[in-house]
Structure formats: structure tokens, C-alpha cells
Image (tube, rainbow, N blue to C red; front, side):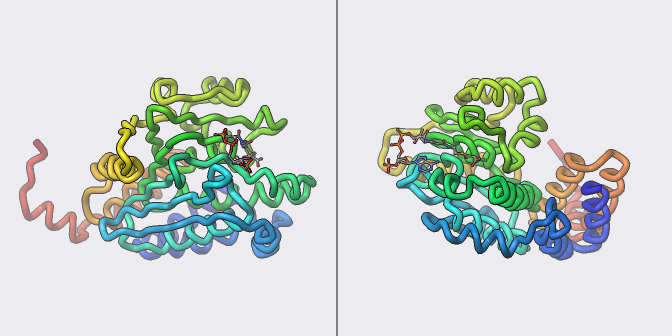
Length: 311
Ligand SMILES: CC[C@H](C(=O)O)C(=O)SCCNC(=O)CCNC(=O)[C@H](O)C(C)(C)COP(=O)(O)OP(=O)(O)OC[C@H]1O[C@@H](n2cnc3c(N)ncnc32)[C@H](O)[C@@H]1OP(=O)(O)O
């Protein structure tokens, strides 16, 4: 049912690029869970705001590549409640970014993210609150992955628990040579709840996903590349400006995929999302509709006029 609804929405949205943003805006009130699931986004936001700390920082650049920074270094960039709310707000801003093409998600101060803030988790440990936090984060991360931007997680240091799940809400993952992604949930008596298990199976297949979750295995860049969780490795140098250098490397890596006009790059992401999420017949129809938004468009006409050769 969720898929049918997504397809209907995709079809409605495909008449113009701006309408994709409107689609995602509409879906933001309940792309996976809505009030029909006994879930009120506003209520959960209020509850989460009671656990403050850290921030989620968004920098939109003229290049069309934005940088989203998980910023709570004193807790290894763990997600406080207010950061969960901020994440959702930043995703809404990105959904409305008509000039956007790419996104880099990274952690502050040399590490990625250590999951939920355990202090908040302890206070929200009753089943009802746990379910609400889970649905809130599933919505936010599903919308993050569906953004019409090509996204990459820049993984430095540790990506643990919910931090590991966050990496799977990006299209690609780049790891530094000393970084680790670890689904530690089993050690916490849990399974992923932010949609990370479902996404992991899509990325690495069910066999590898079962190993990572069942063994709470530490994935370094070599293992990550081997199973397809990592898409590239970044070399951290020992110089002081390391963080900038890594960010620059990630931007360079991403630049080949986001070169070109925003409407075309956004269309590329839309057909990839529909192919990933919809049954084939629905994905084909959506692809036709998205194709219709770029066919005869400025970039297409310019390419035809220039008699380009693809050498
Ligand atoms: C669905 C998601 C899932 C859930 O909520 O259901 C989760 O994400 S559960 C959380 C999973 N994450 C963890 O359990 C991480 C626990 N922390 C560690 O394993 C380590 O702290 C580590 C490996 C991240 C870093 O180790 P290191 O030795 O380098 O540093 P410290 O341990 O001294 O950490 C520094 C400082 O950060 C605090 N910290 C780290 N992670 C968290 C966290 N997730 N929540 C709250 N605080 C965290 C740690 O306690 C230290 O604080 P300090 O006051 O200096 O003692």
C-alpha cells in the first residue's frame, strides 16, 4: 500500500520538477507513518525537544552540493532528541532546494555518529516512546534517502548503532582508512529501528546483512568495499586541515555524478528511487513520467543542437 501511494504521488508530481519537492513536502507529514498509525509528528517533536544538545548543521553551497553535519562532539555525535527534530527540519529544507544536486552527510570533529544519545534512550525506554521515536526517525531517514539529490555519507571514525543506520540513508558511503561502521544493536539487545536493516539488505544483500546484524561485525573500509557497503575510500592525511581535505575529497568524488543541470540530476535520482522502491511496472511508468520532464527541456535541446559525441 505504501508503494502504491508512493507511485500515485510520483505520478502526480512528475509534471514539473517543482512538484517533486511539493510531493516530498506532502509526504513529510507521513511518508511511512502518519496519524493513521497512531503517530502524531507534532507530539513526537515536542517529546524529543525535551532532550536537547548538539545540532544538525546544513550548508547549501553554490555548487549545488550541500553538507549536512551531525554535530555533538562531546557525545561522539550521538543524536539527542532535539537533533532528531533538527534532522527532520533540515530534510524539509533540502526537499525544497530547487538548485540542489548533491549532499554530503558527515559528523563533526573527526567521527561520524554513535547513534542515539543513550541518555535520551534511557529516558524514552518505555515501549510507547520507543515506537514513536522509531517511527519519527524512519520517516526522517526515508525522506533523506528519497531526496532528489545524490547523497554520500563521509564516514570518519565510528558510525555505530543509529549512526550505522544513517549511513544507509545515503545513496553512497565513503570510508576513511581508519573508520568503522558497526550495527551494534544486538549488543544493546535491539535490532535497527530507523529503517537501517531494510536498507542494509538492499545495499549488501540478505546474507551479508544477516552477518553484520547477527555478529554486530565491525566493518572497516576493506570489508565495506568487499560487500558493497562502501563505495570508496578516502585517505586521511596527518595534516591539521584533515577534515577539510576529506570533505574536499568527498566533494570531488561526488562531483562526477552531479555534473550537469539540477533538473537533470534530480531526474536521475528520481528514476533511481522509483526503480529501487517500486514494483517494475510502476517504476517503468514513473520513469516515463520523469523522462517527460526532461525530454525537450533546455539541457536536452542544447545537447541536440551541439551534435555531441560521447567519446
Ligand atoms: C536505533 C538506534 C539505536 C537505538 O537508539 O535504538 C542506537 O543508536 S543505540 C546507541 C548505540 N551506540 C552506542 O551504544 C555507543 C556507545 N559508545 C561507545 O561505544 C563509545 O563511546 C564510542 C566507541 C562511540 C567512543 O569510544 P571512545 O573511547 O573513543 O570515547 P568515549 O567512550 O570516552 O566517548 C566520549 C564521550 O561520548 C559519550 N558517548 C559516546 N557515545 C554516546 C552515545 N551514543 N550516547 C551518549 N553519549 C555517548 C561517552 O559516554 C563519553 O562521554 P563522557 O561524558 O566523556 O564519559
